[in-house]
Image (tube, rainbow, N blue to C red; front, side, top):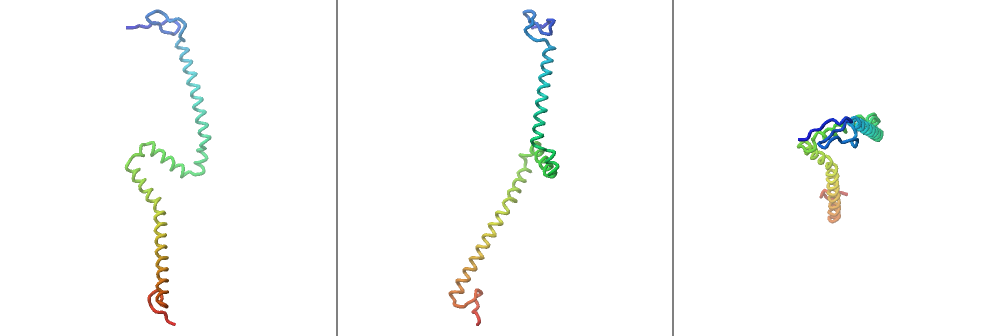
Length: 142
């Protein structure tokens, strides 16, 4: 088993004796870690400030408060693990149905208009062949 003794300068000495001045003392290490942590904290604060200025969250909340609340709810839902649940699947199916509804409505209206146009054209051809019959099939009176 290896035992370490205090070498006087804050460094540890191993089985071969004191390590000398090749390693910094514990006080110097703590000071270095403290300055590195301070530098990291300043960089993080600068990054957060830049992000806040870029996103302009306060201005967005002032302009569209309800939209920002909805966005916060959505982000919380996703981060809370709600993305892969049955509820999300149901909401997606409902959203697809609601999004497809205007397209289906337009197609049905187009088909109905084409059918009415076909009936009008067919009725015009029938009245032209009978020579004076009205579109309802009754002879015209003069």
